[in-house]
Image 1 (tube, rainbow, N blue to C red):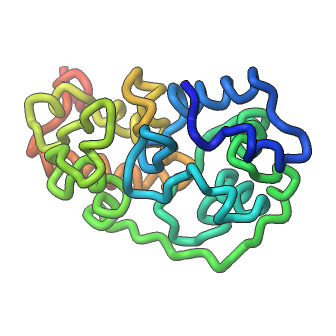
Image 2 (tube, helix red, strand yellow):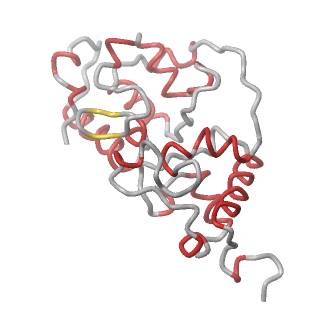
Length: 220
């Protein structure tokens, strides 16, 4: 898979161009593990609710690119972009792939933090509705651009098969760890455990259902 953004002409501007193997590795990460393409678009792939990444190196300086990949809300407080759980080597690779400067991460600007809002409904609208729909019917504005249809949280039959722990783990760790779509981001680095539990409770309200009997506290 070759993305438009890695054309040799743009790579030549980097002090140390990525090798073909490194480019392929970055593309595999973006395709199979990371959730970037759930919201952003590269070439003909990806979502449509975040800036297109084909020309990001022309619009943003290397330090900004490094900072927004490493810790989005540190650079842009309030940004609806979860922090990705990457190893240092993966983070460095992805930063270089998009034309960023990995050495600039430690010097990224720190702006005033935004106070978290733990209202479950507002959290759902902010972080989930673009794909899952405002009422949990899987019909968000970004749903049509995803290779796997978003879960319909309002579907009592399907959602009742999933325990609260499974819902929590999917929100916390993303789709990959649950053998689901990699386009589902991990929110564990961006939301508190209380906020994630609030989202689980909101999903239960949307489906008007509980998890499997075996998963409920005090069940036989």
